[in-house]
Length: 380
Ligand SMILES: [Zn+2]
Image 1 (tube, rainbow, N blue to C red):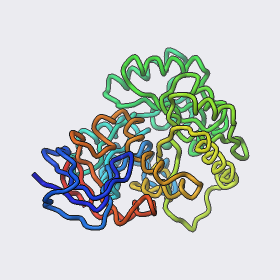
Image 2 (image 1 turned 90 degrees about the horizontal axis):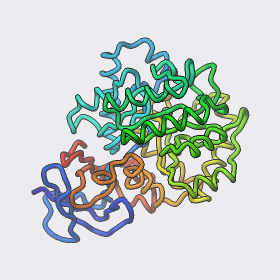
Image 3 (image 1 turned 30 degrees about the horizontal axis):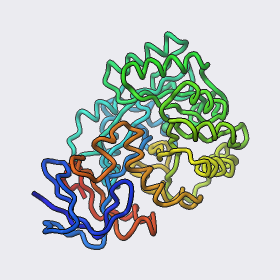
Image 4 (image 1 turned 180 degrees about the horizontal axis):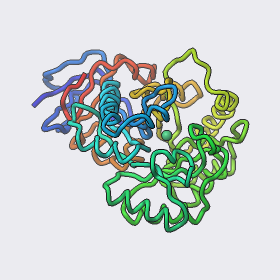
């Protein structure tokens, strides 16, 4: 039985010293503090493979991903998504939650890929949105209480792992506005009730404070972005943040980008100070969080960008330990796979990432993967 030795081990919760991880049939068989190893990785930290709670494999990370999508057939998109999955896995991201595709392509891809070809994919299918609402071009338009209920049922029937709903508008869809709501509370409540009746978690895309408050009131399981965008800036609302902190909801903060010399689009640029203020306010209030990179939506967000996320948050004052939990054990909880992913424990899937040095001392260590294992097989 293969055994891997590392100088340090982050088990998903805390940093431990030297350990030997025994792998059998794709799973972790045992974690020992000494013993013989077949593979000694040296001065590395072994972590659970990272979990990105918010990606779009269908988007090409180009300057205009919407045009890139419109001009492609489903088969062409599947080919690109295969490459996106490979790049994601090579970066040490062994599980992704895909929160928006076209024609349920991420689910199709999940069924086609072997374990060494990509991360485990948990997919939402097309996000549920209003007619001509945010990301309508992905095919998930649904209006009214009956309409959204039917849309949720369709996703359950097709085997989606999660439901995604656009509670507010978004930046990439002309004619929609991030700072405005798309749905009324009755529709949000109906969607949540229907998702939960089918045993599915439901994620809210919400930028505006009023949309965040609605998503919380309706009982969504995760709130994506949670940026408190206004028309010109972003203004974290202390009353809503206190309610988030007291609830069971997990906020999926959007973080992680590659360095770029291109300025952000003006609509984003003027809001950046406010967005950073929102991120600080959420953390200061103790709101449980995971990290979603939104990989695919632009050149600064290539597939596999998640390891840049913790460094961005640490730069804002987040504790490194909290950011590591956010991309491992806490992410597994948000994605409902905490019984097999996000921790290094006997019985868990042997999805592992080894990085140079100590990521608690320097979270940019996540950008220096030495080895990646997926279900016990070395893929890097
Ligand atoms: Zn997104």
